[in-house]
Image 1 (cartoon, one colour):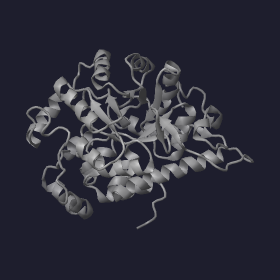
Image 2 (cartoon, rainbow, N blue to C red; image 1 turned 30 degrees about the vertical axis):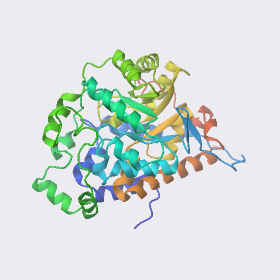
Image 3 (cartoon, rainbow, N blue to C red; image 1 turned 135 degrees about the vertical axis):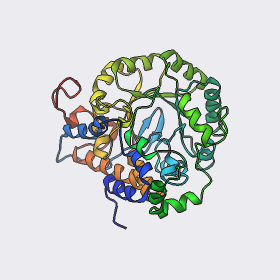
Length: 389
């Protein structure tokens, strides 16, 4: 096997090894995919200040995210269907994150359940919840997360309704995949993936089937999913989730300064500046361009993280230097998982860590916590989305 030296190497191997419907699920956005593309390309407008003749010895990427010590300020974002990218994928990703010393966040719409992940890890992980109509189901999710020792919940607020993703519709995305001529031909060429799936019993949404009222099989699951999300969500309901949980709460999906202020007011311990990886509102501004104005809006009232578009350690450094306290990766670790399983997730983290560390050194910094605007050359108006780049 070729040496994997960057996240793009992992993506190419991932594309070869995973069925098309699951590759497309991760590697796509809504409608024209403008926002999906700009999440990554907008990082390129930010330049780095190279420094020389500076002591670079003894560098450290260690930091904290919501009071938790981390080897670098990077968390594995909640990604639905991770267990379809690789058999038992959530368990494998959680174990890799634990060994590396970074947070892992499990999605409500994971294949492996909360209990599955807890059974195979030794440290607390985070649990992501969608804003669902069924309060009873939400309470039981929180109870299960508490019983599993989860240290924080991540409330996703930008998915009250599902954005249209053309590729998912055309591929007939489902878990487990529907057996059509097209899907069977595709899966027949993905031997490694298929053998893994044959060797696991986890092929359904483990947090939902057998737990949500009336959901006992894939057929009833599809009906539940279509009706479960709460389009009437408001900030009072998010405050209620904080009360129901009773612990640290991260609000994910903030892309507007006013919404950031609301999140701080309802008791969020952290917010994640994110546009759902370009999978919801196509035409929305990239997350990195909205980060400066959101930081200005909330100041020190709430910890601000960034998600959407990170593919390199230099992207991580740019987000941190702009003022984010943490970053989250989704596709970058999914590429590794689909390409090489648990070892691939570890490799993705190693790649990002090395890129972050080397970039810090060449910018003349020894401690990730000292990064700031002085490390960057930012175009005039970058934080103002009305100014063309």
